[in-house]
Length: 392
Image 1 (cartoon, rainbow, N blue to C red):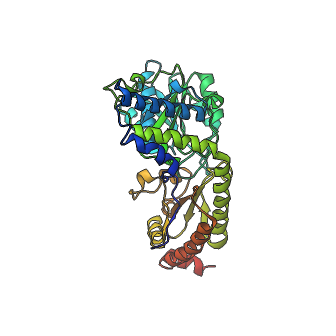
Image 2 (cartoon, rainbow, N blue to C red):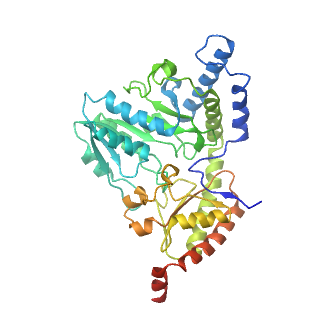
Image 3 (cartoon, helix red, strand yellow):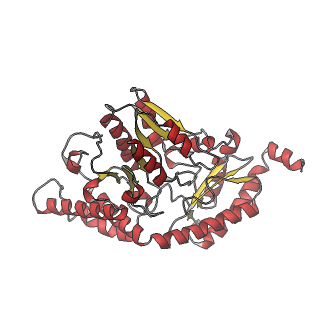
């Protein structure tokens, strides 16, 4: 069997055994609808309540402030659309950045067609916003600021606490997509001062198709899904009980092992970055050098295309990506890499490798060794590389 090294943990993670073990009974033995009042229905309802308590504890929230969704993208949609429609009597101006996940950017474009005005903040070469630009963008019509915690492509961590303080002083709601943050940095919604924050289970070794949103008590959020009284009449639809149970267990494990996890992935991340920079020329590390997701490695390799690089890596059993898994089928260069000032040609040569709990040192050695060979081979087919090399 071909060796396989998975380095795309920001796209998704495997479900941990402890998580699966807690989920399994809710597919077969405890299959009741949580809205039913008989015993197996009440068992399902209790399981959801327990999971909600676990998520709330992990982020420093009250249980009544946590609502389950069908994933991170739904939660993003709910936060942005819900805040926009729930507060449009106050104004119709929203502030975001040019490097948000498409679950936020596409919603903002949708809202623009419905009469809302959106300001898209620029970022610097590391993907960091300018706080002064944010302050200048706020008007008396601004009702929402939505800026992601950790960028899913380049790993840059934004100054969320500082942004939240500015929003609060101006009386503006602040939402942050924390899908990449949960399980990778400590989170406390009260300390951070955010109004809305969302998460996804499958980024923290939980199941796919389940997410959550924190809605601070008192925040007015228009419902996204209508049709039932679930989630305290804010999100209709029969709950994904096994998924929610798995999410609860996954988030508990993530908090318990946070320090160990961060130390492990950061060590291997730094080893991989060093190995690439020392063995391959004409490379650029994308993202902030220090304020960075502990497991994120994002490089651009000049004179080659990312798609060819990914296919070649896959042939030797290395699985990575060129950016967000949600847009991996697109031939367009990453909007994030374009926003930090890269040219189309350089942005097309991007590679994102993200490290997780099951990555080992031998994997990193194998990746560096094979990546060097593959990059050299692909560059031999590039006339531009031959020209640059010949001019040295």
